[in-house]
Image 1 (cartoon, rainbow, N blue to C red):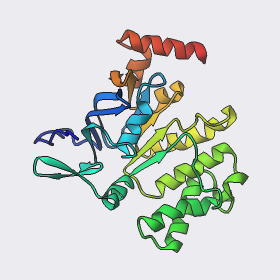
Image 2: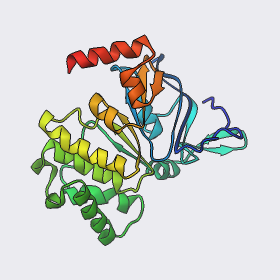
Image 3: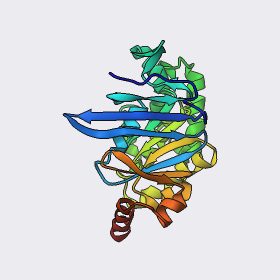
Length: 268
C-alpha cells in the first residue's frame, strides 16, 4: 500500500477525524477516489448523494472495516489500522486494530443484534470482551444507556420481542457502550417502517445536542438539514460539494448537487 507520510502541520485544525486522499477500489473499479475532509470535535457531518457514490464505503474505511488502497485516516490524532514507523506506515496488529476500532462506534442499516441475547446482554458483550469491564459495571452502564434511548422497560427483552425501531435503538446503545469518540451512522433508519423512524432520529438528535462527533450517511434530507454542522455531497466516488446545511440545501453551487436535491424533493 502506498501511503503519504504524515508531515508537520498536517493537522493544523486538530480535527477529531482526518481523512487524507483516501481511495478504495473494488474489482478495478474505484468506489472512493482521492477523498479528503476533516471533522471537528462535536461536529455533525452528513454525507448525502446518490446510491453508489461511495458514502457507506467511506464510513467503513473510517471504522477500518474496509482497508483503503491509498491515503490514511486519523481519529483523535491516531492512525486507523496502521502505526507510523519513521516515514512508513506499518499495518497494525489485529489486537491494536480492534482497540482502535472501539473508539469509533458504528450503527448499520440492519441492527445486527445477537438473537439469542437480551438487549442488556447484547450491550455488555463488547465492553466485557474488549475493554475487560466487570459484569456488574457493564450491566449498570447498559441499563443507563437503554434508559437514554428510551428503552428502560426493555432491558430483558430479546430482539424478536422488539420492533425494528427498538432494535435500532439497542444497536445505538451497544455502540455507545464502548464510549466512542466518534459515532458513524450508515442509513440508520432505512430498514425501518416510516412510523418508527422518528424515535431513532430523536435519539441521534439527542446525541448531537450532547456534543457527540458524528458522521451520518442518510437519505433523510430534512433531518440532515436540521442537525448537521456541515453537509458533504458525494457523487461518483468523490466530494462534489460541501458546506453548511443551509448552503447545500438552499443554494448549492454545483449542478450535480442541484439535480440530486431536486430529484429527492420530487420523490418525497
